[in-house]
Amino acid sequence: MRNKKQFSGILNKALVLAAAFLFLTGSVFSQNIKVAVAANLQAVIKALGQDFKQKTGITIEPIVGASGNLTNQVRNGAPFDVFLSADMIFPETLFKEGFSAKRPVVYAQGSLVICSVQDIGFENWERVLLTRRIKKIAIANPAIAPYGKAANEVLKKRGIIADVQNKIVMGESISQVNTYITTGVADVGFTTQALVKDPNNKTKLYWQLIDPKAYTPIEQGMVLLKHGEGNAEAAKFYQYILSAAAKAIFKEFGYSVE
Image (cartoon, rainbow, N blue to C red; front, side, top):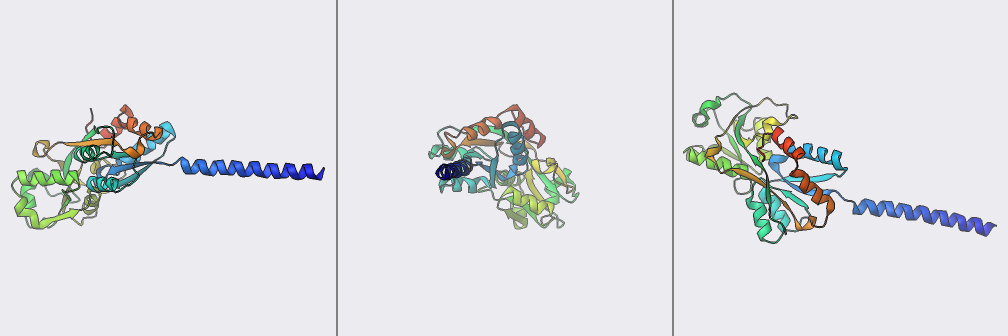
């Protein structure tokens, strides 16, 4: 009798351990989707992630940064599943270099704004930037941040880039530029309309849309990376970004979608 009880106890313990093992290994293999996200989407990706989880139960893990920096991280082996860039150039480059089997697609078009915590009179912002009142102008690094590249184009087209060069404060990404603007470190900055449309931003901001004819259209591209191929959850998120629900969220933050 004792042997049967001992055997039964051992069997129960084994079953408990097996269940625990399955639970733990299941937790390990059921990892979040790693999504490389352009800095202009810092606020948007939170809303998208919440909506996606509500609809599917799947959690995404956003890694936010300048599109150029994220591209270099992919090249260096970062295990990203999906890349939401601020332009089409970086995703196209990754596709051509073999980091994706599928061509990137445009998921939204961004808009550039000039913005400040001061009411500097944006009707004649080009003239205002030349005055002594404006000491620091924040833009993102044009080499790695598409919104910085757009801002640089605007200043060149307006013929004032040389006159304001010594006032420019370069941000590593558009999120750093947003910090410079909202904290008043910079008197004014060029950023994405998503900053002023963000419901979580409590800082009073004065801003104006930049004429879209003054810069190359900011077509933002998405690509499913090799690391995410064969991952059903990553594929679901990829399709979700192109859905009507995601498009509605992009519109709320000032993006244009087709």
